[in-house]
Image (cartoon, rainbow, N blue to C red):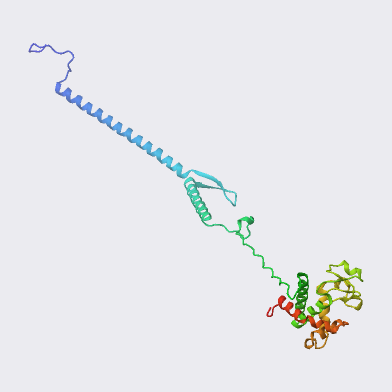
Length: 279
């Protein structure tokens, strides 16, 4: 009990009130400061751990080694994942560039395997020479035989006068038909356009194998027969200045030497139709 008659509080602090309050406040401040410092330290540690983990992941991504074989010595070499990715990107870009270039430029093969793929050039067949129509009263067969005579003479280089003499002679001897001989059955084994009975005379010029003109089979060939006649004509001196009938008779030695002359005008028309002047 105090002097003023009040009772002491058995639970009151023993020290003065002011001192007690001050001591308690200081202790609370120190504890709070430590708590805040601990929290800051903990937060800093966590940030450091996060940063460290992030750095490790990045380093692992950049420094991950890819084991590859060396192309020469067989020793392994290492490429970083970043380098490998960069190289792959370059390769893909190059491939895409090549693809675009290939697609933009059509390929042309010099010798394509598929003939349908090549542009076809239409082949134009050379125009066949127009055969002259029969003239001077001849039929088609006679005109074709006259063509054989003219064609052969031109190959031999015979002057135009010789072509007219040869056609006129064939007109008189066989009427421009390739005639076999009834006396010489062998001649009928070859293509022929009639049969005559003047001894063993055959062909367009009625030449006789027995007189040395040639084998029967050859004399039945209009080209061969023409060559034989024109070769003999060229042996006659001055034949180009002779009358047609005299030049023909010099070769044929016919019993009717004047008969050849009557065919000169017709033979001239035929030669002109087959080989016009200037051709």
